[in-house]
Length: 287
Image (tube, rainbow, N blue to C red; front, side, top):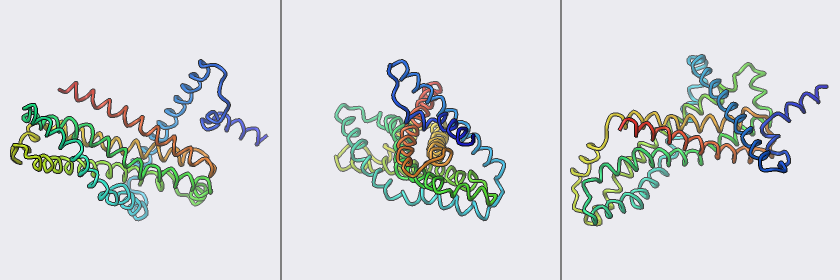
């Protein structure tokens, strides 16, 4: 009787339906995809609400234990990735911004440089590129680490000791990912803007540093800083929730971790793009 109940639960899970044979008609196939999408959104939403509840309810619980974990995750998702992001900022300034400055000079539109830099780098390219790079480096590691811990029974061992797995494993990753994405986005934007002007200077563009930064300051508004902070923290929260959900919230075997990692990356990218589209609507509405 117990085996039958376990089998019924497994058959109701999204992982089982992904492994089930393909339907014979396109309508059934699309219907199954929509059904799986609804189940995934429901699971992610419930997991996000549980995590937020634990963060608020246990804010001051076990600080000597959780505090070092939070600092470790901030180091993993922020400080340790800083050299790579400085290189990316330098390359971004060379490949994108320097070429844009050169093209604007040719058509006599150098006065629009500040507005273009704010639109392309500050509002869109910087935050989204940072989120994707952090997802590739840290998000995938979250799925592998938590999936392995779940498959080996370490999560159940924490529960047996009276330790909340969400508070111990998920909350530090959420806080560290949010802080890391925000900080790395700031460094990426600053590095790209500075390196872009350096490449433009090497191309003998008739633009002084004072004029360049005055254009940037004139194109920026208080709304840009507020929405940049909200967007980057939102990206970090989404990446942490999706990757921890696929690594922790579903029972896994060791051979399923790779497939869960692929699903987590795909769903994180989709969620970040949708959130970015929402902020574009906010920019257009406010403008």
